[in-house]
Each structure stands twice: as structure tokens, then as C-alpha cells.
Image (tube, rainbow, N blue to C red; front, side, top):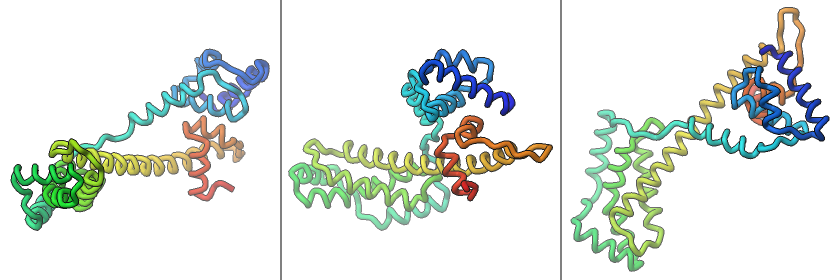
Length: 251
């Protein structure tokens, strides 16, 4: 669809909303834009644009929730990758510098002390499970963090788990807490990388699209509002403003 046609559709739906007391239903919108070839994401942008214009849309909150779930499903999952020879060498050297984990009986004694609130139990478990923490980190090796940093994060997860009070604490619980903490760290790193990659793509997309939308063969420069660009480019209004600030085109 041509930009001019799309703008005309927006103007017409705004007129309909004005006649209905600045109110529209989802059915009205879908019926009006049925032949425009817009996907669900673009329709969400249309709804957001209308809301900016002071037009209330029935079921807007539900659409936002569906959009959030859709975006969440696109995020990459954390998965382990094999250690490189260099990483394997580092792991073996690191493990060789740690104390022995202790026997099952010694560990159980430490857990008893920990459950009783004794500092000796907490410190003893921290030393005893450092090898386990490193091996768990190696098993969750990924591109987001160097192995050395991942092992350090595992140690932090170990210490944080031992700072809690758990009268039923045992080995399965402690190892589970380390794994859970590592998953959260990796997911956060993956999310940040995902968002950074998206920002780069959005900057490139916006720069290219703005040039296409503001230049034509006759040398004329049609003007579009940030809200209209948000719909055309399938981006949030604040995202476009943020990208424009980054590129210095927000003046």
C-alpha cells in the first residue's frame, strides 16, 4: 500500500471516531483496514496512533498483552555449547586449585550445621561446592559470557543461596539454586544482546526508511509525523524518538 493511501485511511478512521465520540471498537478497525494488508503488529501501531489522538479503543489492553507475549517468544533461549580446548584447559587448571569437595558424610555434617544456623556450616559448604559450581557453569557454557566470568557468576549464586535460611537445605537444593541463578544471569545477558542487536537494526532501518519517505524523484520532501512513521515502520513512537536522538535527527 502506498503511503498516501495509508494516510488517507488513517484520516478517514479518525473522522469515524470523531462521529462516535472518539470511540472505536476492534471490529470497526479490522473491518476498515481489512483490505490494507496490515499484519497484527502493524494493526497494534494503528491502535496506538489512534490512542495518541485521544481515541479510545475497546480491548486495547488485551492487544498490548498479546503483543508483549509475542515479543517475548522471539527472544533467544539460553543453551549450553561445548567447551573449546582453551576453555577446557582453563577449567582443569581452575579446578586443580580448589579444595576437595569432601565426602558425602562430611557434606551432610556441613548441611546439618548450616540448617542450625552455624557460620561453620555456611563457610564449609561454600568451599565444598565451589567445584560443583564451576562444573555447572561449564555445563551451561555460552557465547554471552567468557567461561571465567560464568564461573564467577556461579560462585556468586552459591554464596547468595547460602545467605538464605533454609531448614530443609540439602545438596539437591543448593545445586538447584546455583543452576537457577546461572539461568537468570544468562537469560539477562541474552536479553541485553538481543535488545542491542534490535537497536542496531532499528537504527539502520529507520535511517533507510526516513530517506525513502522524505525524498522522491521530483525533489519534494513530504513530511510525516513521528506517530505516522511509527505505524509505517512498525516501531514504537518512543523508540523512533530515541533512535532519532542517537542519530542526531531529532531536531
